[in-house]
Image (cartoon, rainbow, N blue to C red; front, side):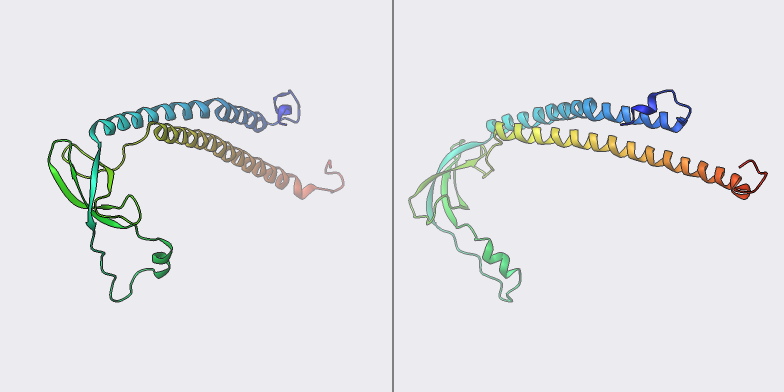
Length: 201
Protein backbone atom coordinates (compact mmCIF):
# COMPACT_ATOMS: atom_id res chain seq x y z
CA UNK A 1 0.00 0.00 0.00
CA UNK A 2 1.26 3.46 -0.83
CA UNK A 3 3.72 2.26 -3.48
CA UNK A 4 1.70 4.08 -6.13
CA UNK A 5 2.76 7.36 -4.55
CA UNK A 6 6.31 6.75 -5.80
CA UNK A 7 5.26 6.21 -9.42
CA UNK A 8 5.10 8.98 -11.98
CA UNK A 9 1.44 9.62 -12.39
CA UNK A 10 -0.44 12.71 -13.57
CA UNK A 11 -2.85 12.22 -10.66
CA UNK A 12 -0.07 12.19 -8.07
CA UNK A 13 -0.04 15.32 -5.98
CA UNK A 14 3.09 16.76 -4.31
CA UNK A 15 1.57 15.95 -0.93
CA UNK A 16 1.31 12.30 -1.98
CA UNK A 17 5.07 12.15 -2.46
CA UNK A 18 5.67 13.91 0.84
CA UNK A 19 3.37 11.42 2.57
CA UNK A 20 5.26 8.52 1.01
CA UNK A 21 8.61 9.87 2.23
CA UNK A 22 7.21 10.44 5.71
CA UNK A 23 5.89 6.87 5.82
CA UNK A 24 9.27 5.53 4.66
CA UNK A 25 11.16 7.52 7.31
CA UNK A 26 8.72 6.40 10.00
CA UNK A 27 9.14 2.77 8.94
CA UNK A 28 12.92 3.05 9.14
CA UNK A 29 12.62 4.61 12.60
CA UNK A 30 10.34 1.81 13.82
CA UNK A 31 12.42 -1.03 12.36
CA UNK A 32 15.96 0.30 12.89
CA UNK A 33 16.17 3.41 15.06
CA UNK A 34 13.78 2.29 17.81
CA UNK A 35 15.57 -1.05 18.42
CA UNK A 36 18.92 0.77 18.43
CA UNK A 37 17.63 3.28 20.98
CA UNK A 38 16.25 0.45 23.13
CA UNK A 39 19.53 -1.47 22.93
CA UNK A 40 21.57 1.60 23.89
CA UNK A 41 19.22 2.49 26.74
CA UNK A 42 19.25 -1.09 28.03
CA UNK A 43 23.05 -1.22 28.02
CA UNK A 44 23.25 2.13 29.81
CA UNK A 45 20.76 1.15 32.51
CA UNK A 46 22.34 -2.30 32.90
CA UNK A 47 25.75 -0.72 33.47
CA UNK A 48 24.37 1.61 36.12
CA UNK A 49 22.43 -1.13 37.91
CA UNK A 50 25.28 -3.62 37.79
CA UNK A 51 27.63 -1.06 39.35
CA UNK A 52 25.05 -0.31 42.03
CA UNK A 53 24.60 -4.03 42.71
CA UNK A 54 28.39 -4.52 43.01
CA UNK A 55 28.67 -1.58 45.42
CA UNK A 56 25.79 -2.91 47.53
CA UNK A 57 27.39 -6.37 47.72
CA UNK A 58 30.58 -4.75 49.00
CA UNK A 59 28.84 -2.52 51.53
CA UNK A 60 26.15 -4.88 52.88
CA UNK A 61 26.71 -7.96 54.98
CA UNK A 62 24.55 -10.92 55.91
CA UNK A 63 25.00 -11.37 59.68
CA UNK A 64 23.41 -13.84 62.12
CA UNK A 65 20.80 -12.55 64.55
CA UNK A 66 19.01 -14.07 67.55
CA UNK A 67 15.40 -13.53 68.58
CA UNK A 68 15.28 -11.87 72.01
CA UNK A 69 11.54 -11.36 72.49
CA UNK A 70 8.43 -10.32 70.59
CA UNK A 71 8.18 -6.59 70.04
CA UNK A 72 5.38 -4.64 71.66
CA UNK A 73 2.54 -4.35 69.13
CA UNK A 74 1.56 -0.83 68.17
CA UNK A 75 -1.76 0.22 69.65
CA UNK A 76 -4.66 0.49 67.19
CA UNK A 77 -6.18 3.98 66.69
CA UNK A 78 -8.91 4.65 69.21
CA UNK A 79 -11.12 6.45 66.70
CA UNK A 80 -11.12 3.49 64.32
CA UNK A 81 -9.58 5.57 61.53
CA UNK A 82 -7.95 4.21 58.43
CA UNK A 83 -9.16 1.65 55.96
CA UNK A 84 -10.71 -1.37 57.75
CA UNK A 85 -10.85 -3.40 54.55
CA UNK A 86 -7.21 -2.66 53.80
CA UNK A 87 -6.24 -3.70 57.33
CA UNK A 88 -8.07 -7.00 56.89
CA UNK A 89 -6.58 -7.78 53.48
CA UNK A 90 -2.97 -6.78 54.33
CA UNK A 91 -1.85 -8.85 57.33
CA UNK A 92 0.86 -7.18 59.37
CA UNK A 93 4.15 -9.02 59.65
CA UNK A 94 5.23 -9.88 63.19
CA UNK A 95 7.95 -7.66 64.57
CA UNK A 96 10.48 -8.99 67.05
CA UNK A 97 13.39 -7.67 69.07
CA UNK A 98 16.62 -9.28 67.93
CA UNK A 99 20.30 -8.92 68.74
CA UNK A 100 23.21 -9.18 66.34
CA UNK A 101 26.88 -8.41 66.02
CA UNK A 102 27.97 -6.02 63.29
CA UNK A 103 30.90 -6.76 60.98
CA UNK A 104 32.91 -4.15 62.91
CA UNK A 105 32.38 -6.12 66.14
CA UNK A 106 29.79 -3.90 67.82
CA UNK A 107 26.65 -5.42 69.36
CA UNK A 108 23.19 -4.21 68.39
CA UNK A 109 19.63 -4.85 69.42
CA UNK A 110 16.50 -3.63 67.71
CA UNK A 111 13.11 -4.38 66.22
CA UNK A 112 13.14 -6.33 62.97
CA UNK A 113 10.50 -8.26 60.98
CA UNK A 114 10.27 -11.88 62.01
CA UNK A 115 11.87 -14.35 59.62
CA UNK A 116 9.55 -17.18 60.70
CA UNK A 117 6.08 -17.45 62.17
CA UNK A 118 5.68 -17.69 65.09
CA UNK A 119 9.04 -16.35 66.32
CA UNK A 120 10.46 -17.92 69.46
CA UNK A 121 13.18 -16.50 71.73
CA UNK A 122 16.52 -18.04 70.86
CA UNK A 123 15.67 -18.66 67.21
CA UNK A 124 18.49 -17.74 64.83
CA UNK A 125 18.13 -16.07 61.48
CA UNK A 126 20.15 -13.74 59.27
CA UNK A 127 19.71 -10.07 58.45
CA UNK A 128 21.42 -7.60 56.13
CA UNK A 129 23.39 -4.78 57.75
CA UNK A 130 26.09 -2.30 56.82
CA UNK A 131 29.59 -2.33 58.30
CA UNK A 132 28.32 -0.55 61.44
CA UNK A 133 25.43 -2.92 62.01
CA UNK A 134 22.61 -0.71 60.78
CA UNK A 135 19.78 -2.58 59.07
CA UNK A 136 19.74 -2.31 55.28
CA UNK A 137 17.88 -3.96 52.45
CA UNK A 138 19.07 -6.97 50.52
CA UNK A 139 21.61 -6.11 47.79
CA UNK A 140 20.34 -5.91 44.25
CA UNK A 141 20.69 -9.22 42.47
CA UNK A 142 22.62 -9.07 39.15
CA UNK A 143 19.89 -11.08 37.44
CA UNK A 144 17.24 -8.66 38.67
CA UNK A 145 19.39 -5.76 37.49
CA UNK A 146 19.61 -7.27 34.02
CA UNK A 147 15.85 -7.82 33.97
CA UNK A 148 15.15 -4.20 34.91
CA UNK A 149 17.63 -3.03 32.28
CA UNK A 150 15.90 -5.16 29.64
CA UNK A 151 12.53 -3.69 30.61
CA UNK A 152 13.98 -0.19 30.40
CA UNK A 153 15.39 -0.92 26.95
CA UNK A 154 12.08 -2.34 25.78
CA UNK A 155 10.24 0.71 27.11
CA UNK A 156 12.68 3.03 25.32
CA UNK A 157 12.25 1.13 22.04
CA UNK A 158 8.46 1.16 22.26
CA UNK A 159 8.45 4.85 23.16
CA UNK A 160 10.67 5.67 20.17
CA UNK A 161 8.45 3.66 17.82
CA UNK A 162 5.32 5.30 19.22
CA UNK A 163 6.89 8.74 18.81
CA UNK A 164 7.78 8.03 15.17
CA UNK A 165 4.25 6.82 14.43
CA UNK A 166 2.71 9.79 16.22
CA UNK A 167 4.80 12.24 14.20
CA UNK A 168 3.85 10.43 10.99
CA UNK A 169 0.17 10.69 11.82
CA UNK A 170 0.50 14.39 12.63
CA UNK A 171 2.23 15.08 9.34
CA UNK A 172 -0.35 13.07 7.38
CA UNK A 173 -3.15 14.86 9.17
CA UNK A 174 -1.61 18.20 8.24
CA UNK A 175 -1.26 17.11 4.61
CA UNK A 176 -4.89 15.96 4.53
CA UNK A 177 -5.95 19.32 5.92
CA UNK A 178 -4.05 21.11 3.15
CA UNK A 179 -5.65 18.86 0.53
CA UNK A 180 -9.14 19.64 1.79
CA UNK A 181 -8.38 23.36 1.79
CA UNK A 182 -7.21 23.19 -1.83
CA UNK A 183 -10.28 21.16 -2.76
CA UNK A 184 -12.56 23.68 -1.08
CA UNK A 185 -10.89 26.56 -2.93
CA UNK A 186 -11.14 24.70 -6.26
CA UNK A 187 -14.78 23.86 -5.62
CA UNK A 188 -15.55 27.43 -4.63
CA UNK A 189 -13.99 28.67 -7.85
CA UNK A 190 -15.89 26.19 -10.04
CA UNK A 191 -19.09 26.05 -8.03
CA UNK A 192 -20.96 29.10 -9.39
CA UNK A 193 -20.63 27.88 -12.99
CA UNK A 194 -21.26 24.20 -12.25
CA UNK A 195 -23.84 22.77 -14.64
CA UNK A 196 -24.58 26.04 -16.43
CA UNK A 197 -24.91 25.93 -20.22
CA UNK A 198 -21.97 27.46 -22.02
CA UNK A 199 -19.82 27.48 -18.88
CA UNK A 200 -17.53 24.76 -20.19
CA UNK A 201 -18.78 22.19 -17.69
